[in-house]
Image (cartoon, rainbow, N blue to C red; front, side):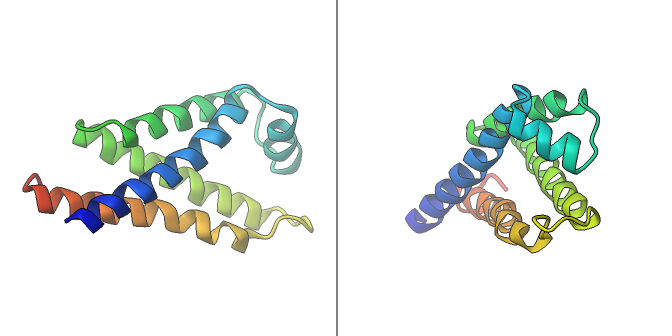
Length: 126
């Protein structure tokens, strides 16, 4: 049980930090964020802060204990964001746009979600 809880927190913190760091950059519309999302991938400028705020809220939701339904939605939304980012990188033919660099980042939500449900099963709340 202790190992499951430790792995749950490790994967969730890593996932939250990943999404929070990119979310803050998007919400603030930093030049790097605008260059990547608008100039390289073609997303409209108004979308960048919106997705940033969504990432920040989702990151907070997966870290706060309780609220299982909100947590499920946050896992789904953040995972869809990563899948969408991977697909966008795949579709834009640029030398630095190697979509397979996203695979480790796609593994994080999967592992975080698996250990979330393992932790729930151990505590009898599943």
